[in-house]
Image (cartoon, rainbow, N blue to C red; front, side, top):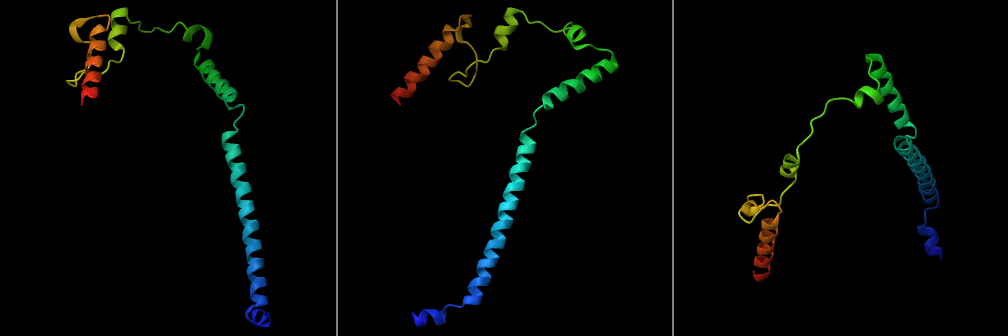
Length: 123
């Protein structure tokens, strides 16, 4: 026990403990400030309303009302044939996408996918 007391430098240990307490308090304050900053950044309640108000104000200044003129804005309507062509299509085994055989019902696509699945199961 006496040997231990001689090896223990009490003033140095007290200095280390004080420094630890300072650093711990500093870390707690930094963590609290970071938490507050994140809450402020993400907690933007009412921003959507403010954004809508600003957009309405700008549109009012240029003479457009959202409910009437924006709803009546011209748009491009697609025919049903164009809509079918615009839909994404899976790639075939040859790297070319599309429905095989010109079948508008997509049966060729199912056959192609089944053939690819069977090929994977064999290999």
